[in-house]
Length: 206
Image (tube, one colour):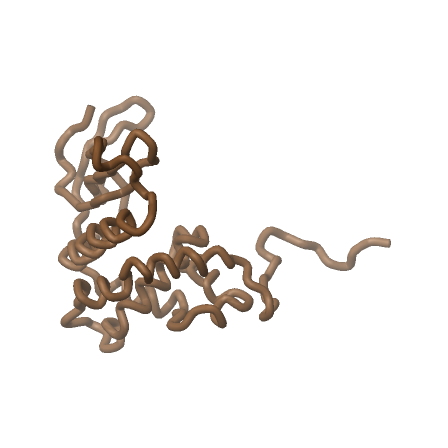
């Protein structure tokens, strides 16, 4: 007896409405809320004017949806749909579709990324106070600042600049986003991202 169906990597669909594929989101997002994530977003993120009228609506729900999607492994906007799979929408309110989140993200400017940085810093402090995230930080902390280059394409990409890169051993200038990333760690903890900010990207590194 042989199966009458041919299964491919893209044919599997999680459509059982009584099951949750990412139940680990529940304690993680509960902890984030206990550390004041939604309140911080409400306070520091403001999309005063948008090209699409609905783009600025409920930034807190949309940002937490994006965070939830990233926690489930999403690395592009379509993958964020994992938070709507199965019974996950029953566990959370304000769960948005990828198309809605895409409209929201397209309204972001460089200034809005600084607003998110303010949320990150304050939320990290709250998490460290509530959990053993950075044990021993009172005695010694390690601060590491490093630059990255993430290639982008198109003529209107905000914040993009030409930065130094090495490809196949050759040094060249490549257009991309060049965030400067700061991580914080202790002798007994893994590095934690404390800040990330875009820069011009023209400074050579090592």
